[in-house]
Image 1 (tube, rainbow, N blue to C red):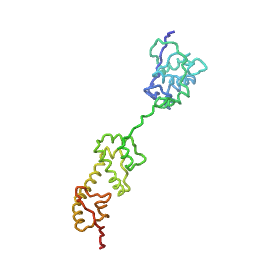
Image 2: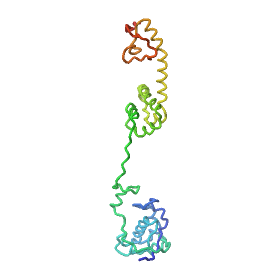
Image 3: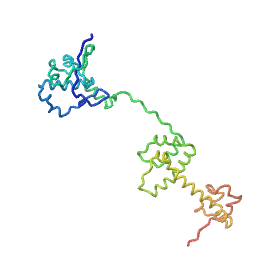
Image 4: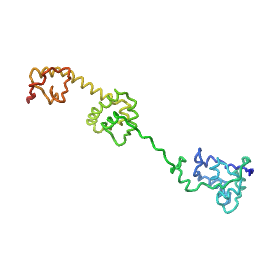
Length: 272
């Protein structure tokens, strides 16, 4: 059955609310309340009722229904509360009369219910959606295995940047790791760059460029080395790596002649 209920507004309600977007499990109660004229002049029953009204208002946008029977039931009071002293001192003010259904069995949120809610209003007992498992590419796995990692590195963040590279850039990034690791050995106090920044800031380009430069310099030396080796039938494995015809030979194939390496002896550098 519809009944007319007068709503009462708590004065300066904004000072007591703690959250703006939902019903809070608590309210702010300022120490200044103890020194206010309203509090000092009210009797003890009205002081308790003022706190009850603030709690009820926290669930109704700062409004309290002018319904003593409802407030008695809601707050488990021993006697029917008298709202008139709070209205007379201005703590509560009448706003408007609205038609509403009779108050149901509105009990305050239980302690158990409050404990189950975190500060975001979510219930931790509700099932949490599992995160989708990331599927890493084979090329990235090779990069991740070779890169000098630290415990705070995120594989997922690095992969997110890796996916922005094209195939040539991925190969360049992977090839730069040995040079970067060699650089770190010369700088023991230098912090390792996070893998995602090594990729996103394109730090790999500098180290890859150094490798390319070194390879270019070495490439220019092979004709001279071969000319010396052919003339003297000697080869220095310690300086030039395995000789022609041996596994692991680094000499470009287009520079080799048939018979290179046959009968060549190991060159022994004389002590100074």
